[in-house]
Amino acid sequence: PSSAEGAAACPDRLARTPSLKVSFSLLLTLGRYFHLRVASTPVDNRVTMGRMDLEQALHAARALVLADLAAGNVAEADVVSLVEDAVAHRRWWVEQWPEGAPFVAGLVAQDVQDALLDKFGRWPVCPVCVESTDLHALDIQPELGPEPHWVCSEAGVVVAPVGGLGAILDR
Image 1 (cartoon, one colour):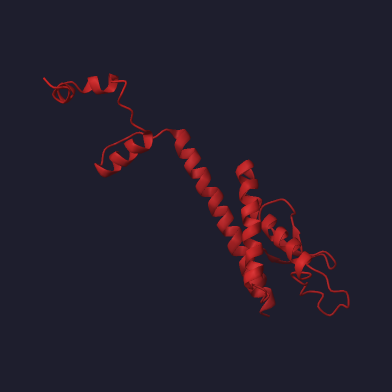
Image 2 (cartoon, rainbow, N blue to C red; image 1 turned 45 degrees about the horizontal axis):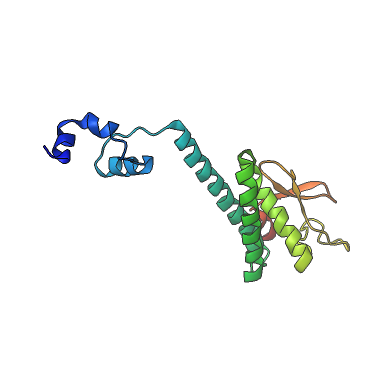
């Protein structure tokens, strides 16, 4: 019999054939196409889910900071580029420390705030102390923690969560 006929007659022979190499991704693709059950390893699932979680955290951070910029009418193209730069920088950071994913929104907001200070001036200007002669920017609290908020350190009040300045500035 030919080698193909012999392989069909003895499926175990294929498994022992050293020249036949099948990648895990090929097995998954074939399994999905032919509706076969192909077991995936828990390690692969953790890596995939971890990557998705990191990307979701980065996209959420981008959206929150852009919402605050739009609320202050400063979401111009060059400012949006600063947001993209901050997200790219924090992508590397969160890949190195995946447990820091919940902190990314506050860090991106701080990065954009610092970049805007260098190029344009203070942002966001405190809406609580608007009557004051000493204009100042809001701070992020906690500096490294989940659920960051914009805080007026002069008055000692929480103004809004990151991404929530629109509700305050619309009043």
